[in-house]
Length: 487
Image 1 (tube, rainbow, N blue to C red):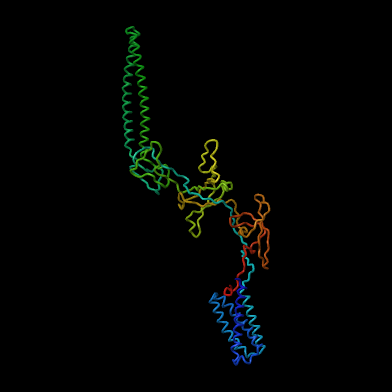
Image 2 (cartoon, rainbow, N blue to C red):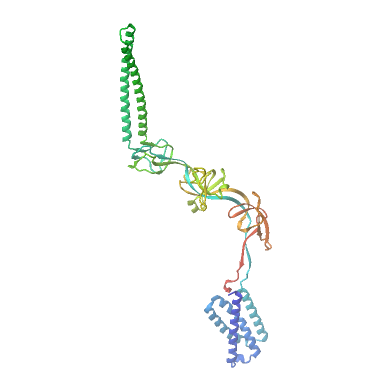
């Protein structure tokens, strides 16, 4: 029920009640000394005056209590007011009665108007000021160390000792892991023994070569004097050549054994694993006593990373990746920093935009086409300094790539602007919008404004608004009537 309807109902109830009470008093109170002298015309005036006055009383009562309680309260006021009105006005002069009637009529009208809600337009405004507007592309990324290495085992065996734990700071060349060297040591010992045997055979062949050389020389001298057979000369010559060949063969075997021994010694050295770079042990995959099998692939034991510089691997949607360029400024925050009063921002610049999305192998004549309903994202990399150690691997980063920025410009909320339906402006040209301004005279003015850089919430106004003006952001009905008189 509206306020006007509430006022009429209250006034009608009050009026009807007063008329009924006045008629009853006229009928049953003829013997009252105060009413016997009151003419019938005066009594009609009394009924009208009482009805108007009680209507003024009934309206706030009915509004204050409401329901059955309000009705009972109104009836009580009607009864008391009727008796009081007749008693007080019965002896009053006629002009006093008329004044009372007019006063009651004015009171009822004032209360009825006060009980009605004024439904006028009320504007919500803000003061136009200056600020910074940024247009950016947002993406979610993961932090990874820029430089890291996975340390693995090149030989099979049991881990006998681990010298580091996750979080240990290591230097380049520091001993990390020891593997049982029994098998590798046996191979080295066998290679060394074989090499020693070959060298002994070589020494023997050198002695045989010397003997064969002497016999060959003796046969040559005897053959010059005709004191030996040709067959003996040929045998001596063949024996000398055979000795030379056996020496070459043994030297080749020695070289081969030496190479095998060198490989065995290298495998023996692989049982002691040293740090290939300085950094921090960020993960450890093996435990003491665990057996490693390096026959088919290199088992990873631990990872060492340089945490002084991090790389953020972000996934940018295909709709925005064309706006991201190498060298573009970017900043990001971590999930934990949002709980701080002033979240910390890390800044950097785009280093690389990978040409293919993750999972694209590029094999064959072309990459496999993704499903039509699958969102495609491209990887964008940028580096950030972490000399204070606040960032950790695998942290989630909420990155913003700054595509455009305007500092110390007139900035207004986008919700206060209305885009025109004209054709889109050329790239790089200001966009035309309309805005409503509330001047000092209270009459709203609509203006055309040119907008430059836009973010998700703010827009740079290049023309059309001045600093300090009141910009209309919305409007609502003015429901500021007294709450106790509202229905």
